[in-house]
Length: 299
Image (cartoon, rainbow, N blue to C red):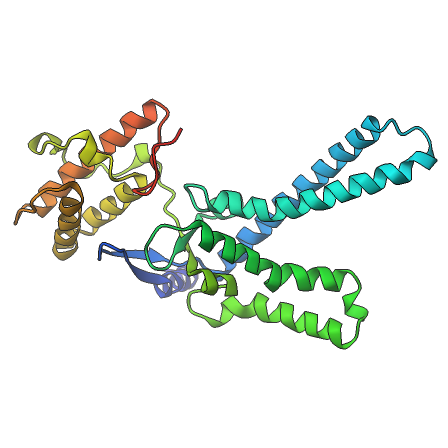
């Protein structure tokens, strides 16, 4: 193993955490590296910037066309109206971009998805609307307000400019001084950014034999879980830890109203995995996907 590979492996091990779900199930995950989080926000801001430029060009051209501007005396009123509308739309776009994508089933903006990251609740529960709003509104206080102040001439405002710069640096460097790389917004909202497995459902595990015929699971018993739980179940089977398999089997049995047996943990989990995978793939063929146990089937 090369020195660079060894350093990467040590970094990965340092980011490993155990997440305890509300059902008491302990699941391994990796928090996002600080460089990955920085890369994701740069990608998102680049997407926003380019989208804004395209929008401004098209909207301005449309605005002048609609107002029939033919001479310079008519330019000023048209520009004022366009500027007001653009300011409102940019405000909505800046917040709406992050809120829309992080409230989606993947819990990630395009930048995070490109780098294999997602936002998750630190308590193992479903990511709530309140948490996503809180972490994104705090971004204004952390970054946007001091940045706009400095860009607007605040760097020449003496003590006020210096205070804005220090404020900005404190929050930009905040993730460097905690082991989970949390922003202030993450602390307030109870969230963190973790690595998301980029595994397509059809490419999921095939190491287990199909024992689904030995157990009869109905649609109602399979509908309680989604793709996320299928991936978690796959990890548990791959790790082949008897204690973890027993815990997962008991959790599933409680959820679907079955009586947990003894000594057949792996056989039960392999059967449930095969049946759940088939159930989800069947739904996908009809244009329905279920991201996790909290989600309704969606196209």
